[in-house]
Length: 398
Image (cartoon, rainbow, N blue to C red; front, side, top):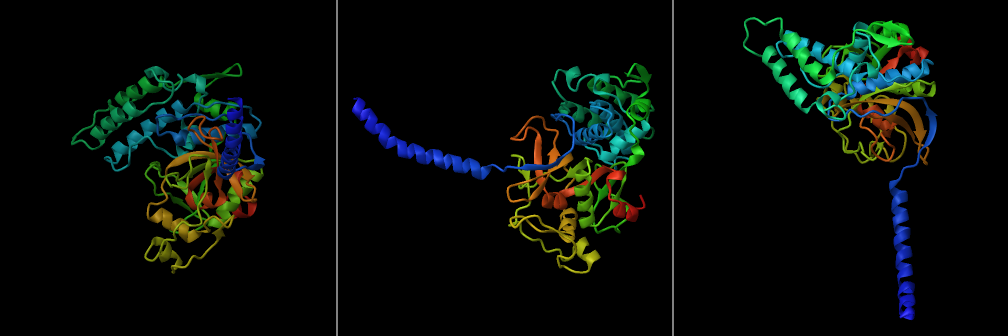
């Protein structure tokens, strides 16, 4: 019996070794190893859970990183305060435009800047923990969105000859049940502040220090325009840069110690949930004849600055980026925070990204986006004015 077992083991060993080797090769093939070039401090990864509030988590995550950069220490700012105030304002805009301005869970980075300027901000512990008031562990807007959207829609699009002034207080009570009372004061450092004083006097945040940047050809470069996306319901303006200078800002900012909030399209199949976003070289070119890009550039050629970081990624041009926006391939999907730079074994550089989906994936809530992906699929960024290289800031009048 022992002899038979030994013979069987001897026969199995080569097969086992082959399988182990194959498995090792597969792991090696599927794993992308990165070396950090520059990593700026950020706060912990949060989880927006069942809510369309990436804009709140990313903008506040960015401001929390700004406080770290400014030497103000680590702070956890309250998404509920921002979301509550923003949804009330958005409902007002929807009603005033008879429903033409969209009302939804989404928002923009400017909502945080507007809130900072007009309402202030509060720490996380100034309001109930997300989800705790209705028996959940985190935000869950499934019911809230159904109720609030139906209510606002009934007011905005209803056949009403007169609107009762109580509609706002009724809506506020709905949000109060989900978020808690909006605090009127905050105690910090042994002193009592209003939310606005807490933001400016205690934290030292100046909303006028932050600007939105983008890169599209349907408006003149080095000017400001209103980015035409539904969640830009406040009609905030972004500065428009040529693609090469836009990418120069992104790269220089990180290398010089700055983070920025990143709004981008994450709906593409090559935005991998395993932690790496890149644009495959095999991505089919689109004919831009008749597009807005062709109208402004006067041709169908791939003119303008090209962003390419490796032989196995798509070369991104200004025209290709514009076409993605014009034909709705590039959409306003998700807000995140870019905080670092890293490179793979081939030397290709990737931006390091903080997400708001909790501790998921191999990088525990973080992922890597290639420069080609950022050039192609960025909608806009929110950044401190001092992070913009001087020669570019001068062109923008900053």
